[in-house]
Image (cartoon, rainbow, N blue to C red; front, side):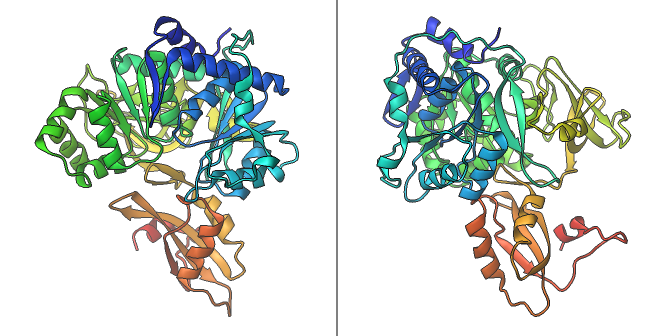
Length: 514
């Protein structure tokens, strides 16, 4: 038997009165977090949720996220975290594809109204039987028509006796590739538990660490590495709902943050968009002991500048939703190589292979493949996609890299054409399918172009149908209404033709260089 919630239970037993979660004015101890998650779990079971049922969750970095997450886990159910920027149509797809039996959604505010989108999606997904609204007080959803999250907290905080096994699915994380529609990666209790344990080991985790969490908790990096890691380590976890460099610095100063993880654009913003006195810089230096970076390659100049200013090492790593996520990392007790994603973590093997799956010599570029306790069970209800991704026990990442003579791994390209915009994964094929629904569009190719702020920006090259009239600004507005805020193209170029191979394949590499 293994249940991921054990990481919370053990810390609550050993450190009951220690602060576990801090979010604004809310401060919860480990004992309070344990009891409230028990209440939620008991409430879900009373509502009819069975072990193995999938429950979707839309919530920003608020204290509700770990409460709901571990309440679902304790009930023996499966968490399906959803990106809070998804449109109603995108939420419907995820609810249907995951066969969600319930949906818990934070109401949001006028700027980011999650609740109305969630309520609309639920009403258009007949097989989703339960909807619970986390009321923010914004009155964006008719309170008389929905179930309320507060009712789950009316259940007793008694411990549960739900049995789960190590290889049972605990989380379904949606990802995608060149095949278009997002796929749900099934991660088991053992996948995430072992990933948490290994990251704690390689980061020299300490009980007195205070972790600042600005990475979105619906994403695997923030969810596994920081949220689950904090609870396992007995750390104080300080949540910030949306990244704001000034808010991050203020939290570092007031909460004595020792560990921070971010994507490259966050480090860029902290370097260039915040004015700090020497006294403030010195105070951060005294407490901050470790930073982690992922999501995309951290530019060397940003790494050097941040480390020089705050006297703290930034360790880069590598992983995917399908690998729970961490597969490799630079280590504190071994030399770092800037630009490298480090060495495979304990219990994980990585090899570079050619198109036939044969391992390549050191220094030669090929596809990064991964084998170990971190590799997902498979894609939910997609046996063909699973078989294509996991071959002979090795997960094929779709990323191109090489390994040097000392075993350090370097990522040099991406097979999947995936765009990483500000740490968010954007999949061109999915956007192209939507854009082609516009009556004026004949052909489209979406690529990532270099951007100083976000690393990459989304650009769409389009060919119009004969006689059609459409401006670039009109298409951008049309896309904005149909796609999540981080996805829609900010740049559009209308062209008469697109470069193609002899077989008709669009040469996206040429488009990226235009």
